[in-house]
Image (cartoon, rainbow, N blue to C red; front, side, top):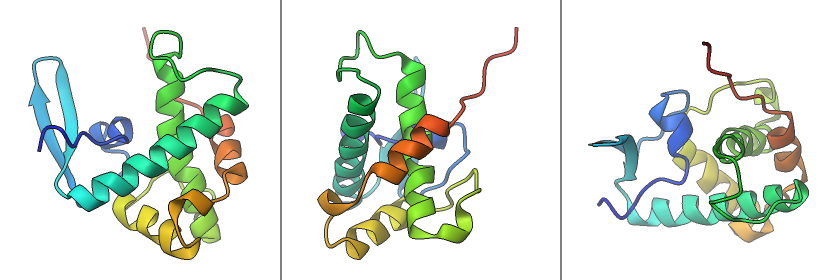
Length: 137
């Protein structure tokens, strides 16, 4: 199960978003989220990879863990899911939470035939507009 680490860990660890397949795993360095379902993990990973690559290209960044700021990766997770939710449910455009990540991604796959067909313009816009919270000192 530990090899099924969720690609949307940041909003799940902070408990801002929910997923019925999320299983919190406590490690020495902090919490991680493992997925309970192999098929759901595969779909979420496909969606995350697609969104991340499009967002990084729009930001003129390369997919490199050493050069991409952690804050940018968190912004992609939050903004990507919120943008996808706004596409799937326009009445939730102003929402700041996703109640079921697994269901949202499955809905996108069935709406567009497959995840590779999901248009990313709205999602990229949501990522660009998402503001992460700054730490207070």
